Amino acid sequence: MTIKRVILLTAAVVCLAVLAFCVVRAGSASRRVIRTQRPGPAGAELILYCGAGIRPAAEALIQAFEEDHNVKIQATYAGSGRLLGQISSLQKGDLFMPGAALYVDKAIEKGLALKDSKRVVAFFVPVIFVQKENPMGIRSLEDFRKKGIRLGFGDERSCAVGKKTLRILKKNGISYSEMEKNVVYKSGTVNELGLAIQLGNVDAVILWDANARHFAGSGEVVPIPPEKNIPSTIPIVLLKSSQYQEEARGFIHFITSEEGKKILKQMGYTVSLPDNNAVPGT
Image (cartoon, rainbow, N blue to C red; front, top):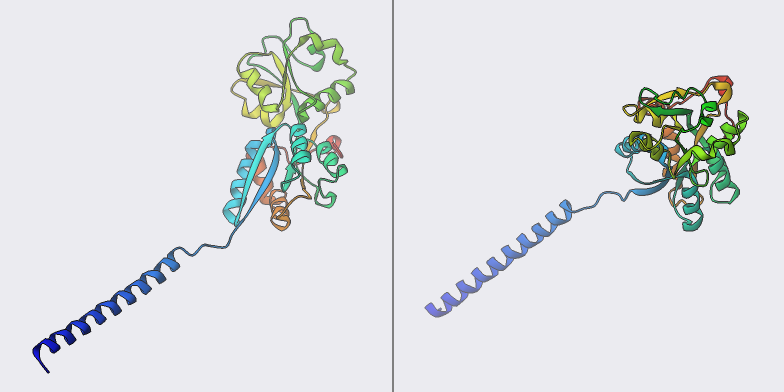
């Protein structure tokens, strides 16, 4: 064998060895990529239509649920009436949690929600909320008739607290027309009523007890006596359009469990009422 042939053979062996090494490295790298980029199991993403007044508690409940489940929850917050309109027009989503039971009942009547899934989450107790130190001396619903009082009410067409306000006035024999001249502001959500007090735009509003606690630094609560009041049920229901019914029912179970009630209490929400304040169907 000539020196030239030996050199050529040696070079060929070296090339083959280098090629084999590269193939092995490439395969190893490919396997590493597959291991490090392997996705976890795909989780469901639920759509929750939630009343604006429930937002603080809903956010805490959602966070707690997501931490323990492979589920994400996308929440839309607005007035309960507005949310019902969205559900009806969009025909998509998984859960509906408004500020009063009548909206869930309407959703069931319209064929948008499953009746057997309806549960009570908590309760809203309406209160009169006034400016700090109550400069207008508002002590009762009857004082809403006073000349010069600036009132803020929820818009009964879009939010639960607006409808509830009218029912409370009617229960107490107070005609809305008697105080209509004093109503200077109507809100689309209950939170906007608290903001109106905070900004000094009104002297008094009717809002939920839980929301009044959120704005405690800006105003004071004037309780409505139980015999004159009408508490509101906070319900939740599964929508027929849900693509993840098992996961959605899991969320319903969680927020109505003892763990869920503990979170609601911590956020200042009422989870039970005295017998004389029972509010079936409200």
